[in-house]
Length: 242
Image (cartoon, rainbow, N blue to C red):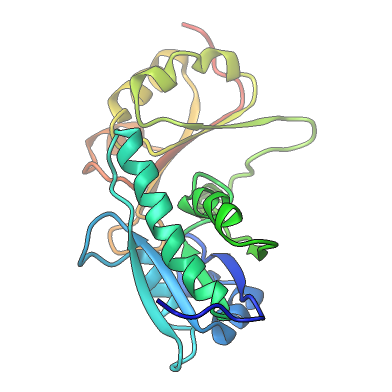
């Protein structure tokens, strides 16, 4: 247990983008170079993360890199205990006066473990000093790679975590704007059936900026592609009800 310092360190929640180290912002790289500890989130011990691999290209050689295990389970109690335990590890370093960074793919405030960690740190560290450095999201990257706009003029955009069938029940409510369906690895067949039935314009993307990347408007190809956690659909413009 490290001793408390008169000076509390600053916590940085850093988005490192979709997977390409060249898409890390200048501000993120500067923060990584000055912190004493860099934390990554992993689903089990011994497994590294994409965010961690990217961060290793930027942080100082004098910094210490640490993995925090956040089990990917449905049980809320297990998840809550993991957030509290890991927040305690980070809080210990902050209270000892060390600046710390937590790195995440995409953006720290969009479906990220960072937001849960930050909430727990606020309970543990009085007058927590923190800074969130945004990152480029996967859906921004998919739009850029396909060279198709996400929204124009007065169009709206809805982002839905589509890892379960329940999350897809109300898709028709959003059919007049752009619909981003993230975490589509378990519901891909249901989503492609919806796209075909309603004759939607759609983009499928998986493993963006990584080996095996796929960005396509071919729904047959999207449906037959391997199941991939890092996958999403962008459904553009109006769908025509069948």
